[in-house]
Image (tube, rainbow, N blue to C red; front, side):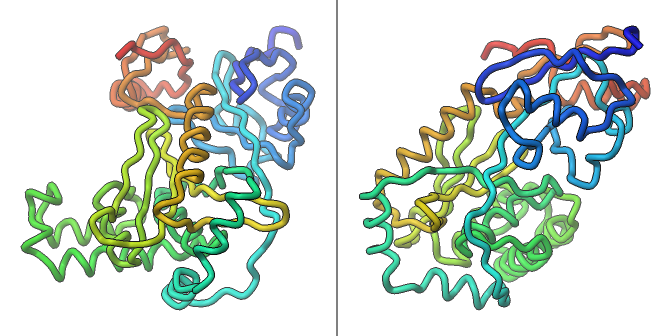
Length: 323
């Protein structure tokens, strides 16, 4: 049994450690229970990311063996805390109707000032890594914390329609591909969204969308030239987008005034904490070792090419390349 013992490197917001109690036959839930002793995070509130790039282990995989979810000795996992919603929105409506109502509330600015005065906790709400995290994050933020995993197709259609209706603005130089080719591309649920999609959604919903990069600690604000009065925040870790929310007591808020400096400061502080605990994927500047042949690989591209050519799928983190 001892020879089967795994060494798993674990990164948490409170530091790093090595887990030595697991074997390939232990389940994900076994590992979560063991991790609880080190991290003081209950299994129900624990989110584990593994692989390169790191992806979260889904809830339905908790009963699978570690070898079945591709966790091997020498791998590095990231352990995060999931803050459970304190308030569930039960009456679901169509995305257009709900978003319009939420952004049109007359008392929004007064509500902002009241919350900032009393303080609160800025938090990251984790959405699934399903290639539509950007769209799901925008919907979550525009609807004060309502999540609908099916809404991404509607948003993709909004973007495709906007692009197709304005071929002069959205030309091949702007899009990087022909107008109609791009429309077909963004409607494919296997493709991710980015800056172009955020700018279109900002204009469509008449709201600023601020995306904070945890690698560079820069904030990219889409819609600044639109004279919009309200803003939502997303956090970006190099691959994945999540929405941010302000929790105060038993309430939460996801839409803020554009002039709310206190909220912006809280967002940047959260991003700094995420960077300090290495909650990001620096896809261009990380070195990994193939645990099957010890080849050193630079960045995501080389790792993917190596896996494709050799069939090797077990990688261990080595170090980041200094910029």
